[in-house]
Length: 77
Image (tube, rainbow, N blue to C red; front, side):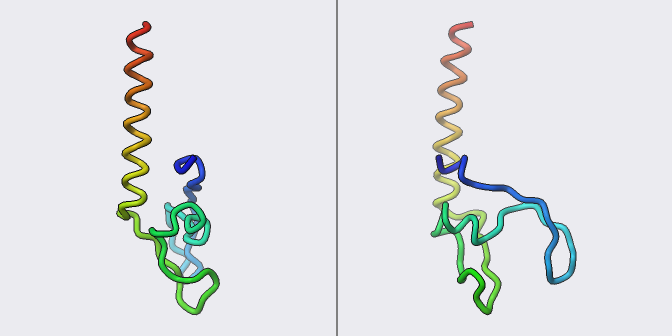
């Protein structure tokens, strides 16, 4: 559910129009509050910690689950 709730985005920064690939902080904050700093619509822009333990631990758990499922499927072929 954690991985499914993450919404990767491609967009442009309002400040300078440069492109970005990543997450919108206030969207990610609902899924992974420990990896976002700042307040939605606050005076300062929010930031996302892409290397947060919360995010990495959930990605590793999902990867391990997928590897187990693939190994089981390969054993059936």
